[in-house]
Image 1: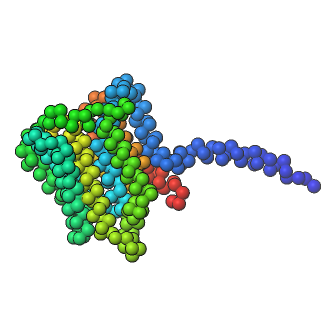
Image 2: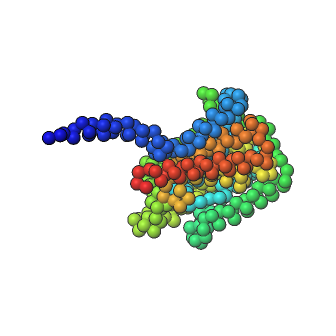
Image 3: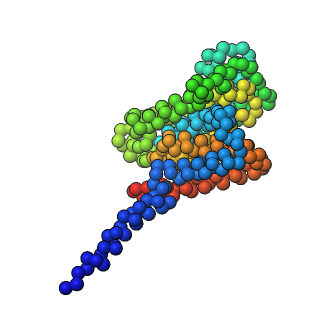
Length: 338
């Protein structure tokens, strides 16, 4: 006649604490969208703030915003392009050509408006040429655009003839002024990122990019003009590279050899990848890209403030990127559906 209700009571009472504990595990934290990347970013920022008081100063934060704005514009174009299964390794070099051509035109007395239009058209045309090569020759995007990057780096050096060119106060306002306390460069980057994010989420063009990245053959069978979309995507990437070049020129006030180029490109690619956009296509997120860009900017700023030897800066930066990428991958695998 003995009842088993008393012995079952502890099990019932133990239920809620177990569920509460599970919510506190690292696995549960990683289920937060971009949670791993946010954790790494917060840790780096806290460590730097404790080690360098100037890190949280308004002047330093404004400098960081200006510096990451150029990378953010290139990364925005890459996010959309990589989501569609493409890649453009020449955007940084395209920006370098924009800087050199823009500086030369301004230095020779050409109107600012004419310079802006000419350089943007040139950069867009360069992106379109990349798209034509990738679309109609079947050359792998990585190979085609890497070759284009080397070519464009050479063009930038030829335009400058190995010398630096200053533009005085031309375009100074864009690179240095603020609105409501926010640098114009940052406002411009936010507008570009918002436009790309909205396009990816709410427009047919954005949905087609996801479909092409998921399976290009199926996308073509479903009625998507894949060739036309590719040309548009590469032209857009080129135009945004040109915009980034103009932003860089306005911030520096001069063009010099090796401004922009492959280093800028690799930084943008790293930001997009650790932000969660797939190299294989079919998945991309502007929010993740923003976090990736901010992380890279904070790391670079931290290394400068902490006066880390330049020989170790690439080592430290690469290590932080590797950790962020690993944490981000764990988060992706722990997400529902994996």
